[in-house]
Length: 474
Length: 127
Image 1 (cartoon, rainbow over the protein chains, first blue to last red):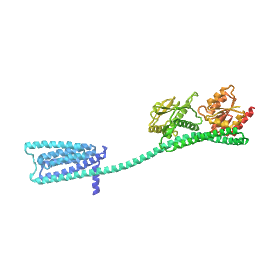
Image 2 (cartoon, rainbow over the protein chains, first blue to last red):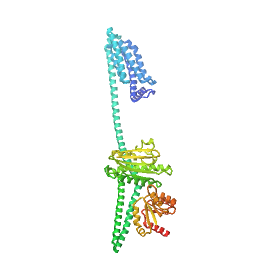
Image 3 (cartoon, rainbow over the protein chains, first blue to last red):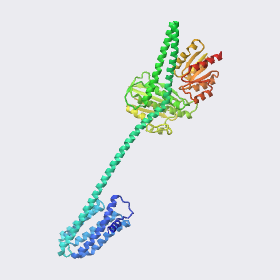
Image 4 (cartoon, rainbow over the protein chains, first blue to last red):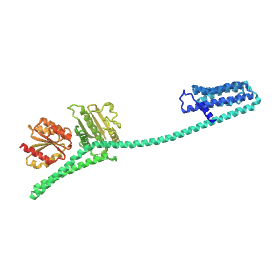
């Protein structure tokens, strides 16, 4: 039995596939269909009621009302828009309702409260706006009828008035039942909405947690990328550094060897008693030792610089010799590039401000920026030398200046230059014109960030196939 | 006999002068220094004919490399022998130097014993 009923309900709820419903519209249409059947059924009951109270008008017209109600679901199946069908429903109920009211005692008829159902149905099937519209329509019609009854004194009561108690009982019983049904429907809808909200809320919370996790991962990845960019630029330095260390170490070894020989000579001359010669040799030994210390210190500084470069930056600011920094990184970059590409060569010029004071800054950060710019300059001139003629002299010039308390470092090259349409992009992270694997694209964007955090600025000018000039201002 | 040593590191001059001080003191050899290829060429062009008979040159220098200098010297002063000194002892540099006409190839750190032998040979040949 239940199965048959379920089947009936499913068939009942079958909507015409002509429309694309969202969930709410689907729900409302389902309610409209069920309400139509219910209304049709109630009208049949009311026909029975009319028979009992001998209400001929009702008995005659109600079959039509009932038929219309029963036809509505089929109209939807046929493809008629649910909203139109809803209006038909309400029109049906209102028109016949008013007719019945007219013939069964006007405002004193037990049918008149049933008219209040119509705006509520409008809310159920459509929305509040339509409900208001219908409410006003019904109010208007009933008010004008009321006026008429007032003026004409009596409304018609074309039924057996001795049966009034029965009539009233049936009408009010039915009405109460329907109001109860409506309340249940609304409560069910409310609960469903609350559940939906709960579900949405918990899924949003889940998504939020996932997003937070993703954000953490991205931040970690970013840190890793910055670190790998540092290591990449460190790798470029390695060859240069190796070369740079080799020279001072050679000197340390060579001068130490010479001093060994000189000491032998010293002993010989001491034995011979040539004190003047002894003094001379001693002086030579002394100056050689100074050379050894000088070159040893040089190698030490290079290694320290290299370690600094790879370490996580503490951000501390120290008094720094800017000219020395520029010079060191220039040589490192040059040798680094030469080690990678033995055919590469370039002219280097330096123009350091003579009375450059020591400036408090983070040497590791600034060094990275300078290295990045110089490396870029070398790449630019190398690219140009690939297609330029023999008269081309690839040149990179590093100069420093100190004006009005502001430090300026200028790196100029006569390389390929930056095309105008790319000039706005060069500071963007991951933007690079180098082929895959040759550059991270992070160099300039990191440099920009570093300078900004120092309260400085970086500007550039570039002309295609002529050269580029980058200027750091701190 | 005049030798020319070309290297962008200034201490190389002091090194050479100390290592070869006996030979310099005895007058057997005389050493001049240039700190760039350009400077080397100017020194060579300073005397006609140039007094220098042998050049030791570093390869890795900014501007004109040792190889560039070698090629130029071979064109302008074909009688002068050129040997390379370099930190990079790889075959690529060696091949390039030799095919451009270098007499010898010494790697850094400089083995002054073999360098002295070379100088000794040159001095003996000339005499």
